[in-house]
Image 1 (spheres, rainbow, N blue to C red):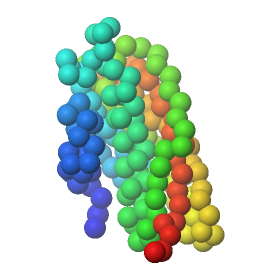
Image 2: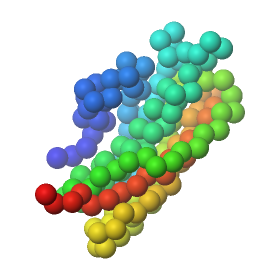
Image 3: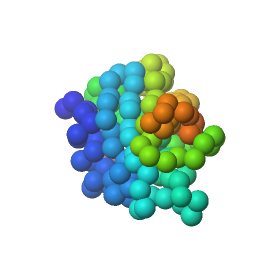
Image 4: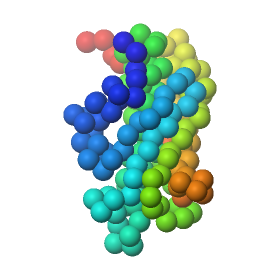
Length: 153
């Protein structure tokens, strides 16, 4: 089954409802890049009239996670994924539509191949950058994902 933005967005409605209600939507997905948008609204703002940092984090994480989900699905193997660490930097107030882009899809295949070949867990750091409608960077997130072969029961 191909992983598509509409399938991921439907998945978020049922399994990640807080992200869906905040307006986090996957717009583009290929093997290398994922793009997610979210619009600053009353529902997802902080007391300083900008987007709450956690909403930005959900959008940023989805860019990295969607890339991993796509490549796990393509591998045909049962592999678990989990965020182990993350860092974030906020450089400007997030208002209007914020677009998060991750272009680290090329890092995933090697980690998946090692996990499948050795049975040992692997980690991969991926970066997502959020920009406003003027192209100004508002935040940068980095996520350390762990990938493991699921144990047979």
